[in-house]
Length: 542
Image 1 (cartoon, rainbow, N blue to C red):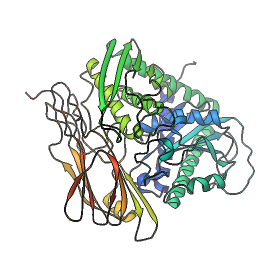
Image 2 (image 1 turned 90 degrees about the horizontal axis):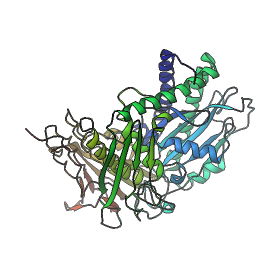
Image 3 (image 1 turned 45 degrees about the horizontal axis):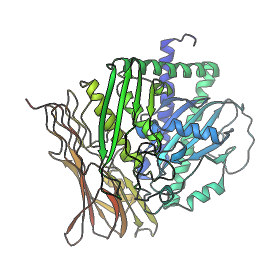
Image 4 (image 1 turned 90 degrees about the vertical axis):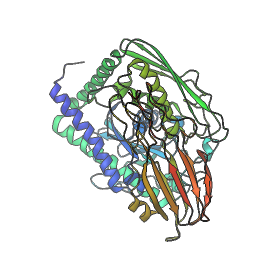
């Protein structure tokens, strides 16, 4: 590869990253659902002409590491022309779980692209761009419902068919025109379909923002230079990751952790890893992990690769470009038919949110043997997924509320862990009480720190949170969580964090402690209280 100017490289890194960030801002500001506009449960990225990721926004790690596989699946399955938008959520084609819907479009050198200078049009209009895409842009957003047996699409189905609408790579728009039949088919199979449609349109608008900004870069600097520096960024990331791996002592490091259960059977589900470091390369092998299970916590390969990518990216100290080069020195072995690479038609709703967290815990536990001065104790290790759905008595319309609840961060080698924060594979927020109560027939009764839930040690683990929500109408509530049986581990003599728990408090004052995974009917006046795990402590008390 030809030499590059370091200053220009940094300019392009900032430019491409800002494109992804601005796509996220456009999506957040135009989305209708609180899950996207308030919790920021979305991700955006920029890809080169061959589909390699160049830059990503500072969004959801579980999305960002897996989105390149979704874009690759889209490019294999569908020819993307000017003004086309491809949608997919299929976990067995680069997706994660069904509520996460990815949209992809090409950026072409001439012409108007997606809907021209206005919004996506529902009529034909002439397009005359260069047929060769210069870039691709993609976003992924968690839709608060995508169909299936339970409101929120995060229940305990035992196969993928019970979890919602499965979308292979298909056109959602062609030549700037929305495919009405495709949109109608999707919307007919989801709850709160007007909100879903508005969120899809926000995603399309976000793609248009990315397209416009990339074309501005090309207009200023030329397509050749823009493409060359995209390749330089990928190469630079590769070199930075090789340098980070080389700083880890050679050897093999093994660890095991486990999920509580799958919600169907009560037995633990182990995840095992062996990390082999040889020079500037790493082999991450999950052989020996549990076979895939009946419950909804199976992870697909894209999730496992995403979790490994996140762990190793955390070891790169510099502001490294989040490009395809990061994974080039890392080989991931995830045996088919296991909890870390499930076969179709496994149910996978919790693989994205729960198993991804446990994969991170297991990988960090192994790396802590090699570089103990750089790896924190376990964080809460769950996203505490809460969904509530029913009929809103204020409007007579369906509602679907989805949220993940913050918990304790693990203590760090030289600092306490932070309390009540979203950690590792999630980078979202809790819905503000005002927004939640405005959008849904729900009332926030408590939201506070769960005192003394972090593990003690030289450095203390962060405390979890308590979030209590009253339902104001009959509804179906589902919980998909973990770390209720096996606590978040401490490191190097630090104590474990407290395990999580959850309750339904009925109107008569009785309390029902809930299992970590399941669905329950709740009536007006009932309250759901989630007490999230604390992080593990680090080091012995002196």
